[in-house]
Length: 486
Image (cartoon, rainbow, N blue to C red; front, side):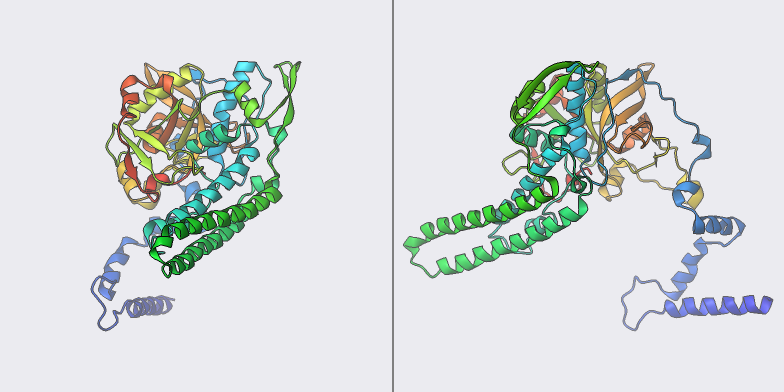
């Protein structure tokens, strides 16, 4: 038996040595045989290492890293909580931004009109979201037609022709333009709940359309170059008009694909309003715009401020990200960058006034989905792996290790001795996910993984509002902060 073990060890070392031989003339910096021998000492193969290896061979890292000392369920009492009813479910789609924005508004409507519950149609706005994003891409291709194909902006456009993710400015721009309808007026479809196949087909077609637009411009421009100088301006206008006509035809085909998958957007509908005891209060016919005007009626584009905690950039400044909008004729995302403690002040003021907020974070970090708790002590990866993870929030953002990934509705805070100790968000993953459809986060987790909050202006201090008067710092579309919530 000992001979077999010795022979196996010799063979393994020989194979390691042969694998790590540097090719003749190879540059320095690769893993040599000597280096491999040295770095392989990181795994000692002792009894502890073997036990961990055996466990990791058949069990997920998350299960093994669960911190048994933190296994008890967190206290679910909250000193201040917004009145809400019902949990929504985005299912297999990246529409968290849309569900979250609409959940903020429906909480207001339910409370104001004493409703037994209600839900806005996400499908209605999602139809226009996808159509508007298709137009945003195609018009972007037209706007950059003179740039070379390998230009960073052109490359970014073709890399990102469409997505089902987004953020609050999409909610405000779409509602302002198209209004709102209740869920029963345009219900969800399978494709709305499972967006990937539909999105992949539309993205494939949009990329094809983008090439057609650029080719049409290049061919037309060459032809114009052969004409007399006096005809150039007129010919360029004709070429621009041709590209717009092409875009309209292309969008017509996108519209058809969306209508097949989601249904055509409703133009008029009847809605019966009942009180909390299900007694009929009114029965009226509405358009999407008249429905919004009657039951919400806010100036969404001017009544809300997006606050960001981005430790990579200077606080007290306002930033704008190019192409970070859902509607071409809408607004890019503007955010005020502030320390997290200032953001908490506004969040607490809003919750105490029974007003929910759009909130986004890096939800996958230290998340115990069974309990519905976001806590830095949920998992002990360092003890499991014997490795220390030392980056702070700024370093994680700089290295793309962390960023805003999911939007939820901030609805509660627990204040003890004048300071917040935990928070709660209403999620859109159905009532069985997390804690009764919600997630509870410790204040320490909030500090590390909260990124964006959208607050009504009345809860924003005057000195913060004053920052909006600054000229925004322009950031490119590919900035890490662009990543849409899903």
